[in-house]
Image (cartoon, rainbow, N blue to C red; front, side, top):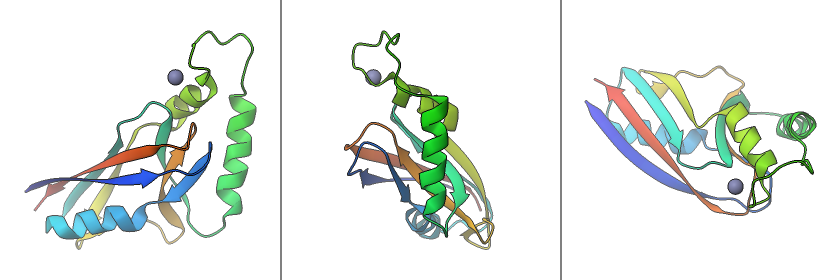
Length: 134
Ligand code: ZN
């Protein structure tokens, strides 16, 4: 079986992290697929998806500090939109994830959550979920 669904994320600030684990789990549940894989994809160039700790809100804060250190705004950037630091962060983090589905649920560790990361908000964003299995 194959299932495709999508949901929106409204980001509120320039840099924002949203725990979308429940949204993705709902997509898996509504697919009816019990054993397989789930591909999560976001169709944007200044946002990304990552799996990271779901408990301590200081983790997204600290990862953002690190990303800002790795990819600061630079005077030398040439992209006229002025958001090359965000484009760089998106390339570093990535636009898609693959998670194992078993027993009709995402196979995630206790402390793992699926995060949508915004680097050039606020914007209305889209996340696509493809579930493949039986
Ligand atoms: Zn741009």
